[in-house]
Image 1 (cartoon, rainbow, N blue to C red):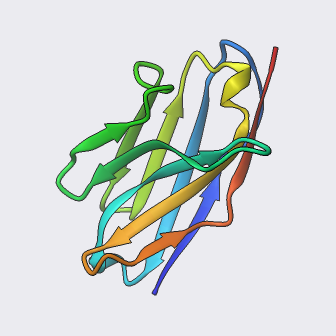
Image 2: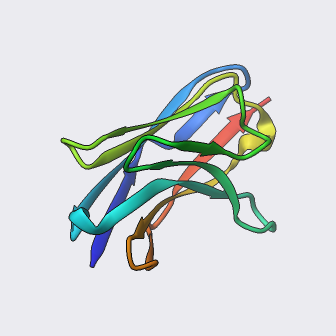
Image 3: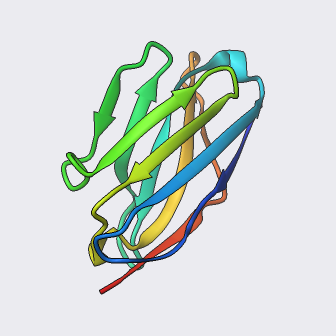
Amino acid sequence: QVQLVESGGGLVQAGGSLRLSCAASGSIFSIVVMGWYRQPLGKQRELAATVSSRGSTNYGDSVKGRFTISRDNAKNTVYLQMNSVKPEDTAVYYCYALTGRGAPYWGRGTQVTVSS
């Protein structure tokens, strides 16, 4: 089992920055990918960014060039640095982890609201 706890969400003005953190605990040795998905109100969950245990990153098209994902393996924590945020970035952001056996885990989510 893997537990994920997000922090860092809140209200930010358009053009500003915000950093999300997600700390993993439990069977952390089994995690091969960590990252963030987001779900705007009334819409489907979509990829924000992921990072593998080897450091390979993947970004959703809508955040490329503005968001940066990083991972601190010593702290079992993944970060999402959000720069130049837009109102359309408003969503619940969910931390995500994938084990080597293909089991996905999700955090409870943290709300990010961008005001125009």
